[in-house]
Structures are given as structure tokens and as C-alpha cells.
Length: 488
Ligand code: 8DG
Ligand code: CA
Ligand code: CA
Image (cartoon, rainbow, N blue to C red; front, top):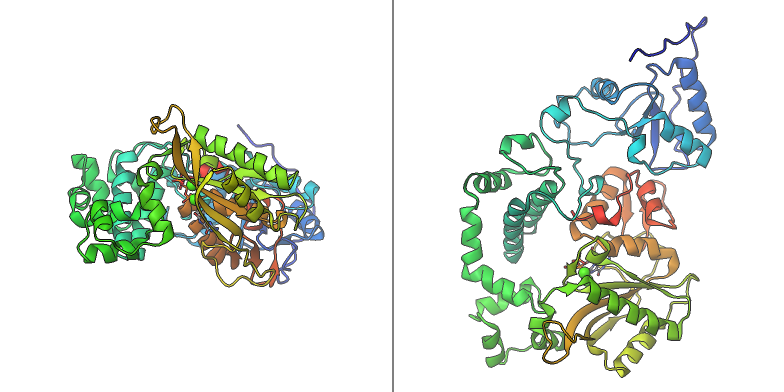
């Protein structure tokens, strides 16, 4: 379809001023407007409008730009223009994800909202050019991708995840992460992979992972993975680390001491913590997947118990179930109250009451040790919320433990003040890899520190508050990823 020609300008319109960019009210958002088809005078007008609203708008493209806005251009045209600006070597040649390519609709909606609105698929320009022909376009960070629960490359991801697990058992965190990253990329592919070549220069796929993929594609299995799965070491490490309270270091020590079975562990009277004793006692139950229905039953029971002490408090089912999983290894429950501070002290009342009702088979609690608001020291997974690691006794009349009518289930109870709740919810929804990637993205691409309590902008030395998960994604200049698409 022919474009409606623009009216010829009589005078040359002024270019947007080239002064050094002002930081703007929204530090994660740097705009650049494409002049082509928009015209210089309209571009100058829109630039002035956005700046007046506190947006940073750069006159020229640079690596700092996060949102590239154009009017009446196709996605391919803008992608070509961008490639010229970046002096790019071809699809995938640059690991930098580059800016979001947006239609003017995103800009106008943001101007009327007075702040950057979350990028929705309808705002994005569709790029069908070279990137699409040279294999799939997969953004480099898992938090920039949508990863649904069901995907088409199960055999490949299982193989890679076995190697990731094995590397973790050997203490090779870097190698483990490399396999996890590769598996995560495959989970985001829209179709089943037929040949290695289809992958093109995808991010996060190293030599070793490619070799494993090649083997599985050709032979249906990877000999290396088969070897690992059959090895005594892998099997023993897996057996021991499935005990609640046993990490890689303890399992490895037991292995070095010659222990191979749970029976040996008990016979030799190995010194166990109270947590490990409970883990061993309920080993079979705790390694039987928890169903969504069971998780919801527990969530409702906790909600009712919470209301006895703090009416108005809310219990949210997080973890894998929030991502749409039908089964999980435990139940993650977040508790908050609409008034900041009212939640303090709730957990011990709750746990004592549940205990008195015979619901709790084991628990250990951790007090709130959050000292903020101070610049966070790190973005580690562990947070400082008041919380309780429990084993619940769940009535299970017809379930796998039908004979005795109950079943042991692992439950994590976490209490967050409402001001930190969106961060806690984001942090406790997972997946673990998605969380790791969010924090890595924040640090390297935005110079921000993200954890389950807060988001801190190190360039401006300030905290960025958020009333919802969506706002956290906005602060980070990321397209919102709903929980069901965070199965990275
Ligand atoms: P599953 O139980 O269905 O097997 O999987 P999951 O629900 O995804 O895994 P999980 O091990 O229960 O962890 C859920 C999320 O909770 C995950 O993103 C990591 C997060 N998480 C912990 N412990 C801690 C912690 O101490 N602090 C923070 N911020 N997050 C934690 O598991
Ligand atoms: Ca869980
Ligand atoms: Ca958990």
C-alpha cells in the first residue's frame, strides 16, 4: 500500500536540540524518535513534548537508547535503520538486545499517562527481516523472553538440565549455569528444533551445549547424559540432596565417606540436623509432587488461620503454582497486609496456632533482618523477610498415602510488608533462572540492584518504589512478562 505523501515543507524545520541529554524522571527509559516519515518539525515538536513531561529524549541514536519510536515505518525499515546506526555485523552479531522498536501509539499513550506505559505486543513493530531468516530471534536475557510452561523441546532441555545438575553437584557453578542458560533458550523457542543449524547465533549456547543438542537430535539421546545418569556419584548425590535440609556440600561429604543409601545414612548414625531428621522421616512424601489442589487447600487453610489474628491480611500462592504449574515440590505462600507494619509479629502467632492444631510436623523460622531502606549490598537470592520453613500434615483421604489418611508437604511461609510486596512476589514467583536473569539484567543493563525487597538505582542513588510487578518491569525498561511466561 502506498504511503500518503507528506506535504512539502516550505522551510527547513529545526532539528531537536543536540544538547547533552537531561537524565529525565524515568531513568530506565531513554527515547529516540526516528525522523524518517515523521518529519523534522513533528519530531522536534514531539521531542519537546516528551521532555516537558520529564522524559529523556536523545537527539541521536546511541547504545543508551531503550525505546526507539517511529511513525508510519514498517518494523523492517526501522530495523534496517537501526542496524545502520549500530554498524551491525548481521543478525545476532551483537549481544546487546538493542532498544524496543515501537510504534507512535506507545509514545502517545505514555504522554497522556504522564509516564512510560508498559510495552504491549500491539506497540511493537513487527520485524520479519534478516533475523527471522537466519534462525530464531531470542533475546539474550531470559527476563526479556516469554517462556511458557509447555514447550516443544523437552528431550533437549532435560538432557541439558541433567548436565546442569551434575555440574552443580561437582561445585562447578559456572558450568551449571551455562547448561541452564542453554536449556532456558530452548524453552523459549516457538517450535521443535529439527537441526542445530536452525539455531543460528542464538545467545547463551556454548560449544558443549551445542554438542549435546546435536547428539540428542541425531541419536535421540546423548551418550554423555546417559553416562551421568547411570553414574553412582550422580545417583547418590541426587538421592541425598532430595532430603530436606541437605545441600550439595553435605551430600558430597557423605558420598566421600562412602555412604550410598538412605538406610546406610540411618544405620551409621550419621549426625543429622533436626531439619535433616525431619527430611529423612518424611522422605517419600516430600518427594511426591504436591498437586495444585493440595496447594490451594493449604493456601486456604493458612488464609483462614491468618484472619484469626489479622483480619484483612492476604495470602498469595507464589512459586511454580503461580507460574501455572500443576505440580510442585513445595507450596510457597506470601503473606501481607494492606497497612505497612501491621504484618509484624503475625508469623509466630500463626505458626503457634497451626502447631496447636496438629498441622505442623516440622518448622524453623527466621526473623526479619531487613535493614533497608539502605542501598542493598547484593542481589543474592536469599532475602531477609520473616519466614518459616515448614512441613505440614495435610489430610489426604484418597491420596498416595491413603492408608494413613495424611501426607507431609513442604510449605514456605513468607511475610512481607505491603511496601515491599511487589518485589517479594516477583522474587518468590520464580523460576529461579528467571529471577537470576532479572537481577543480571538490572545490574548490567541498568546499573540497578534488584532483590526481593527493593529496586535501587545506583546511578541516581535512589530507590524506585513500585505498587505492582508491572511497575518494576517498567522501572527496568522491560516488557511485562506475566507469571505464566516466566518458566525460564
Ligand atoms: P517447585 O516448587 O514447583 O518445584 O518450583 P518453584 O516453586 O519454582 O521453586 P522453589 O524452589 O519453591 O522457589 C520458588 C521461588 O522462590 C524461586 O524463584 C526462588 C525463590 N526463593 C526460594 N528461597 C528464597 C529466598 O530465600 N529468597 C528469595 N527472595 N527467594 C527465594 O526458594
Ligand atoms: Ca515451590
Ligand atoms: Ca519454596
